[in-house]
Length: 95
Image (cartoon, rainbow, N blue to C red; front, top):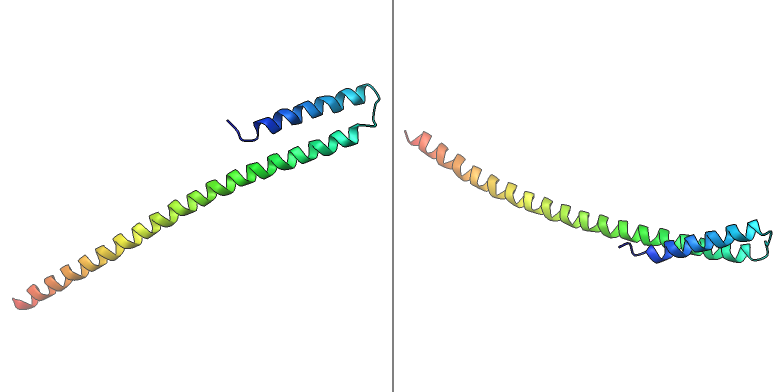
């Protein structure tokens, strides 16, 4: 479940209250409710950004490990290739 599900419910309740107050022509409490609504929206936005940052960080770490593995394999293959190349050169010269 989403970590900000409760905030979404609170936001919905506040929006309903604001709508009811507008319909009743009672504007005196709307500003306070709207400020609460804005705080909740900012909290949700921060939570979403935090989730995205964490996922991106995980992807970057996985990518870095993969790159390191690839570089190690390339190094190993290069070493093996050079050894084989030297052997071929040695045997071709010995004939």
